[in-house]
Image (cartoon, rainbow, N blue to C red; front, side, top):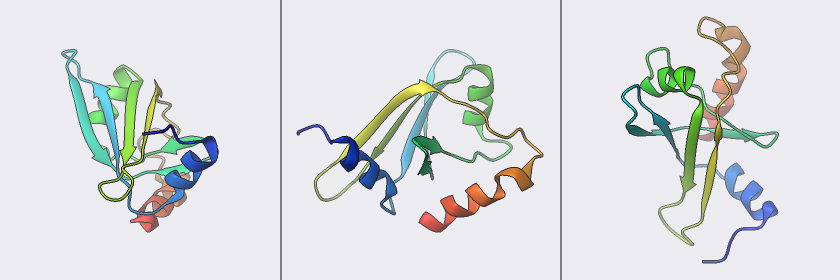
Length: 108
């Protein structure tokens, strides 16, 4: 399968219905993969974890992540991301991230 161009990646990430799967490193060093909703804004994958999300605790301890966003039908396109997660808003700052959460929810 040919690699997607930058424009194709951007277009794909804006399509509705794709789930992201975020891989984090658990406290014991083993991997964990969780499906999550997301949006892509300004070149960043934005995910809003819940207070008790295990992957949120993993990221606070070790921000290294891998994310896969793919499709089940059609051309089997996919986007793979590896990097370091950044926590934009700490727990309890709901008003600061509420608009992002709404945009994520509206995608699905």
